[in-house]
Image (cartoon, rainbow, N blue to C red; front, side, top):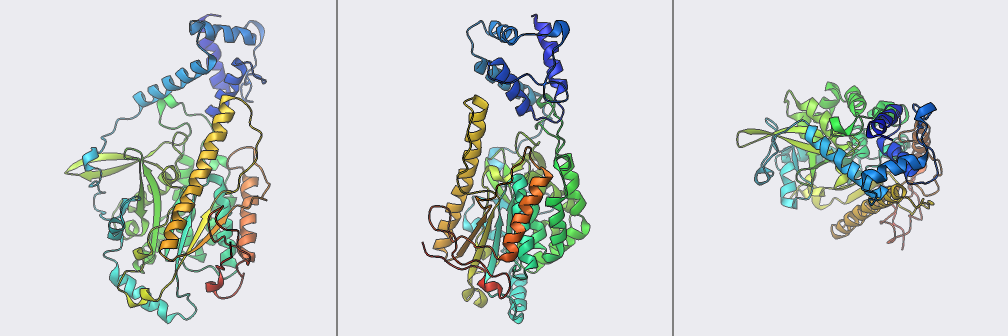
Length: 488
């Protein structure tokens, strides 16, 4: 078979893949070449049909590739070379940008919106910059809350993790908790990835629960991203994330922004996490400050940060954010906040300042929603490179998330914070054939809703340290009874 004929066959392969990911297509193709069970993809159905003179035997394709590699290179090595070649070409054709010099990374700011972000791994003193000018507002909030007899005296913090379509669990849990009448008004809400799309709705209170329900139960995969392949040669992501961008814009409008600003003026804080790829560091964005800025680009920036926090690197293009430093304009690349931390919690001092008489008699309650299972999940893994890699990466991500829980738990113990953890129950058995499958998300939402309405049995520590709570939270009554400690 000539090289030109091989290229024509390859073109047929590429054109035949419609709604299948590049990774899935490549996996089937390489499995075929390597002699593993399975057939080549045909156009439009995930399989390639070879007819007439174009009909080739598996050995012919394998022989051609081996010959091209001087008959000594393994198929795996060929695949690796192809991957790196495509990756290199993608970098070459990516739209150029002015990268912030490393020495100026700490000083880069968004023009007209100072003090709206901080490094997620910064010191407590650096984090305090987000609350430094909020003391009058915080004092007003404290006075207002003291007048509300029904309001819990605790400082309530909510942290929502990433998890892709598993974010439907957290959304359901929160809406069910709200319908039970016991969900507190959180003083600090943080979100990453899927959690970033949930956090603003919860921050605004129960009036936005219907919209939160819609986001995780109404939209299918094509509403999140274009399932067609976007060639890596012409962009920085396999898929087009513009559907998700449009979905965010549908809900986050001018009124939404005003509501966020009003809550921030009361001293409540909403933080969203992204990852700065150049710096390899997490970035925390004070979304309320952005909303309060009055800047003409505030709404656009708010939307871009939500998109960036949910942009899985490689799958979705990174989000470019323009910054200024020393009179020059640069662009940063921001992706999924879960790359650096799958869930995060800022210090309570961000919403309650040291020295306030009210803060001295205030306890802190922390609620973490992990949009995933934290127990091991059995799966028979095929002995192929792609199956092994996929399983290993998913295991790595899962345990990274559990590691984040241990880190937060350790800090909670030091600061005498009441730790409460929720996660998808190991017994949940509904499966999906593709990401963002509507049937799966609806079932997971209902699972979370039932748990939230009936009273979720919050775990008092990360897996391996404590057993789950023996007494579930009550579905009605004083919010201060929601977290009940359980013995080890």
